[in-house]
Length: 108
Image 1 (spheres, rainbow, N blue to C red):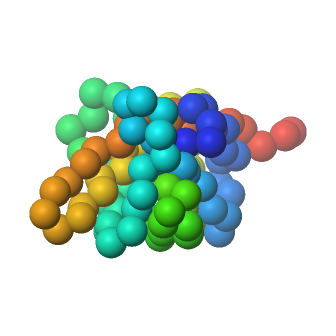
Image 2 (tube, helix red, strand yellow):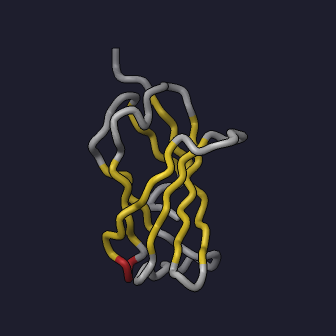
């Protein structure tokens, strides 16, 4: 689902983009033309998402989208989150998973 399967982010940083490229089960790029994309970032086992927002399509035919990190999104070092993208085409919904985000500390 992404350029990377694992992304490290620095605690407290925000205003940058997390970029994703969506693939199907056969490793083909998924065309995002006409899709709206909901992004959910959650801790494994949690009852609700840490982040529930909209991702912006950046290149539909290349399966590319992004989420701009907001202040407070990743405010605790050592946390590990999973990413879920829900692709809604109006007549069908497809869920893409597979990316893990780890929050790391700033340098001392």
